[in-house]
Image (tube, rainbow, N blue to C red; front, side, top):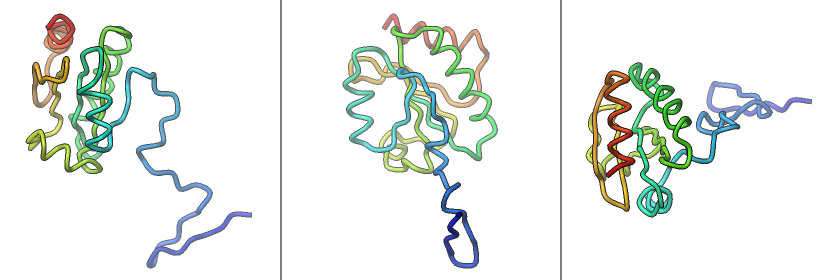
Length: 137
């Protein structure tokens, strides 16, 4: 039997409600979501490998294009580099800390230091160069 919850004038099925951030079940370990400053400090700043950080939003068209491209390229370099995904709508404090005013914005970190960045969409070749530079920094 399905239970229904009343939220204002809206009805939601309790058995089907899943927050958007947790809808993806099989994300590789080197690609992960970051939702808090503590999480960022642990998974990005203290990482033993370089980390590409993708600041994005669900409503952002260019983000929907760039995100999968980044994931594909990072998947091909497993062990050499990791990727943190930060939804600015859920992690506003992190976006403010890193002065993110445009999405998508991508930062690269190595040994706790920011080593590179870009905003908007870039060509595949430039994306490869950005990742290679982060690995070799």
